[in-house]
Length: 372
Image (cartoon, rainbow, N blue to C red):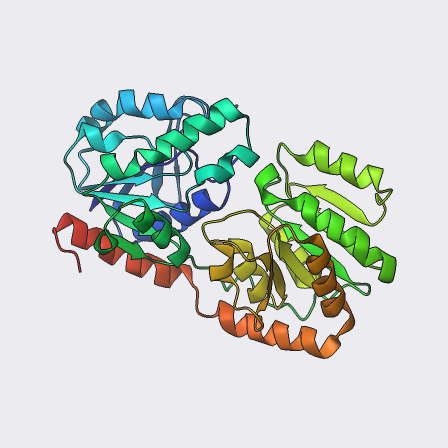
């Protein structure tokens, strides 16, 4: 099978996140089976225009600011050149509307939709552009087949009048050969909490910082590490500085995958306080390393946490409740061990091999015009 996939970015892009990881993990496994994969995405400074990675041909054009326009203009020639059996459009923020340009078998992947939450991340004008762009999805893609990564996103699409029969939920996986407990890496002596991911406004890391300032009043030996980078870092560092907590809450910046795994293995708990997500890859990655999680009780994240078994959910934005849960986990060894064991069992349900097998069967059915 020849597959042409269109996504805003590829995982090597400094701005890449979970949506890019999700697509790459699936595509590279399909490529290993001998299928031809081309990924069309935006470029970034010093990036190669064309390269091969993990069996995938990556073609980069435009930038993350104009790629939707570039993709729409260049797709006809790319389709003539690649002659794909299947087109995959990964809608992450703004749709490309390329379904208007062809009648080939098509799969639409949607990690999650922003809806009005986009206004908490960016200025009103750009937010309105994204908001209105998402509103057009039911009209442009009404007859297409959708792959989503959580029941929450499926419900969101159904509310937007996408037929339920056209939506398949295939959950994300994790790489268990990498994300696992390591007996050679010990837990930190003092309580350590993590945030791992992009540092964006809608991730609501400020709520975690406020919560941790309350934790330190009872457990002054505790520490918080914020792992990752993003355009909201300076604001958060100012917040930490205003609280005089620079020695207790620290920012690592971007780290390698190997370093990230060691942080998960050393931590006592991983926290994901975001406003909305498609799934919550880091929740499963932390669990696979034997680390409990705390996450906002919001679409996506509530799908990736088994509340009371792999960790706990807390009301979005409730820094007081989050601080209480952190203190409970830090001070109750028996509970921490229970959540660690429960998280390991929960994480075993998810693998990229299983995800890819289900996704490829779906792709074959679309090409063969089967759908059940």
